[in-house]
Image 1 (cartoon, rainbow over the protein chains, first blue to last red):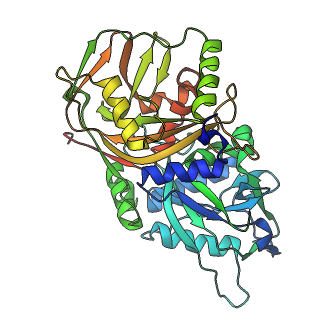
Image 2 (cartoon, rainbow over the protein chains, first blue to last red):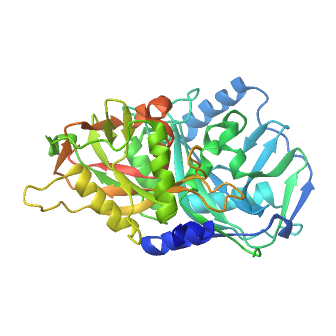
Image 3 (cartoon, one colour):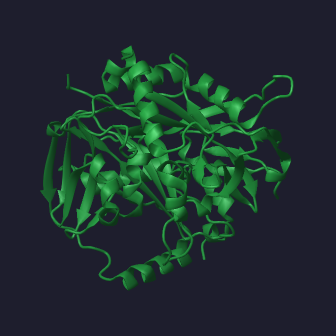
Length: 221
Length: 221
């Protein structure tokens, strides 16, 4: 058996990255137990029905044009495997933390603002710092009621919504404070592709968008 | 209606990339009719049955260790939409052009060698130049007969195969010469996710891996 066969898998990845030498494909993730999860007052949900939500999107489009959203991909380590942080609303819908940009706001500024408001409410109004990394992917909604596509479909001149996913690098410890009617969950990457229906189009594609990275699990042997 | 609503979609993307300012997310693609497609002598297929292929992989693993493969994502423009170049074998199996690395060979060198042998056979032994760009994704096969995963599954210490996808930038014109028993096809990105069973796990994920890019279609208004 060749020498490569007995290298441990992490070594295999390091070796490969070393030989390609094109981009930094290593990414540090920290153990879940370095993070504190707390809760604060519930915030009201905007929509009660799908019809309401579509109506609201139509009004917003008429007033402001395309809906530009940004969402964060944040990872922690548990059982030596990367876990993705997801918000769960009403015990059912899973979402990446993020939201809609204000008119003229940059992706990075908007994502930082959304992370501060959704994941951390400082007692004295002080926010946490967020390190926003590269854009991983982009999803388009050609019309209000259509599905999301990972490309702008041919002949669509005025898409209604664009959602961009950014990698956000977490420090080794952090306080997450979320409203009581939301849950912040750490879901193993390996469970996500198998549960496409539970997590929806955007989230179920995240493991693939992350596949080029090798994860340095900090604090592990 | 706000001003953004009447911007054409390409403008929307440019505007967004300008505001994020983190990476170069623009990518030039050229019309299909700038390329020449020819054929040369058929080459024999290595495997006749799945069992044969698995047996060959096991022997190779015993001799050389993990099977490292590299594959190319190459795009052309047709009907104002990006099309992915795919090789089709025996009128059925679709593959990205690429193949197995030699022991010690770098990803980039190996991919260039494979592209030269699979897509271009120069009459005088001269090869075409290939511009290999960033790594888009990586797929793992934990065992010879298992599926591919976009992450290294927990507790897998000695994966049997790793396939890395690289973006390859094509010039505006090129000769592609493929063996007669292969076909080189340009498949619209928008058809790929809808035909998961036809294209398989790796190819059907490509549109998502490319979603962060905005495509400059050169030669179009």
